[in-house]
Image 1 (cartoon, rainbow over the protein chains, first blue to last red):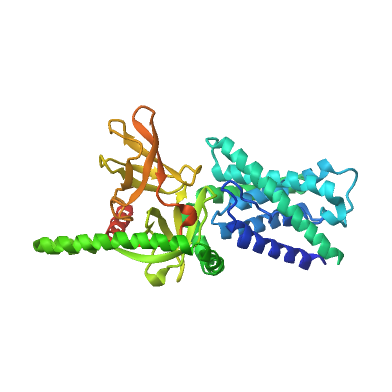
Image 2 (tube, rainbow over the protein chains, first blue to last red; image 1 turned 135 degrees about the horizontal axis):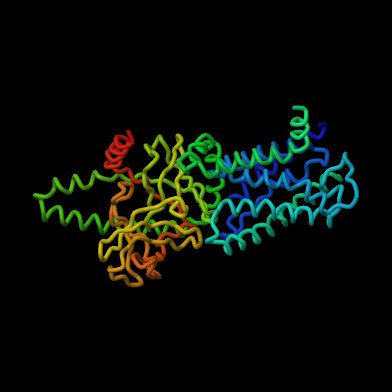
Length: 169
Length: 275
């Protein structure tokens, strides 16, 4: 609970970056990076499941509000929140420290990269499949998912490194 | 009862996920773009402010191309004016007719403040709103073709559903034969749209011009949209035609909102029909 201001600030910064900059960035038509999910990914291990789902629902709603796609980001974000415990279980050894959180500072670059990669893929796959919602453009959608995921993963890790630097100072 | 509570407690994560995911998917698939735009209308003022701030920077880089485009358009309009004046003099008795034709459509200038071509459902934000008497349902054109349709407007900004939105269908016709069909984007290439429902007996050729039909009362008739680049026979009755747009949506800047006098009449008819 004492970390509440920290996470609120992170959410605001991510939203400004996402809506102000990345949504206006035109990277060749097929690439739409979504970095706001970093917020969902780095919530502490001790976050109860229902709170994780409700927070994701809320974050998705803000995105939809600005992107004119009511329901789309909400679905994808909730899907990611649902998958998060399973992702963490599948790539971790032993029991997690309840006080820590799945971020770069606590888990190291190797673990965090794997974690982000799987999380981004889950989110983007849900998002782009729902957006097109047909298998007519299946290969095109696959290309969009892969390219956008690669760029999102890059940006998310970059932001996380910057966050860690600031943390150290 | 106790068991049920225990079950709920044990599976609350899955149950809550199913509830939330269902709510959001139903929201996504059951809202039309008009409803989404209405939601967006609440934030239009805020996002419009930020977007116009960003685009005031980027429009500097496009000044050169904007200028040449405007210049060309000016020349065209002047030519047209000269032609019309000539005609007016020659046919003094049909002046009344010309006047009624003039007032069918009024154009209001606007500038694009935010634009997207990289999603399946693209929207454009323009800097003309209710104050400039821009209202939902009006067509938006640029000097090189159709841009989209206004879906909602705030005081100073309006949200426009782009032609590059898989939800929008525009009535268009083959200029040579006058046969009309429906034009829509298939979500792949931002330069190319699909024209469907043209029957097989029409003689088509690559390079033929496609223009607006003027049936919808959103757009005046005979605005050039694009030219045919490819066509094939689909399911034995209609052509599937690929049309390359004249307008480059990536460099959209100055647009015109079309205020059609017929639009109000048509809307009244539609409302009456709904009742």
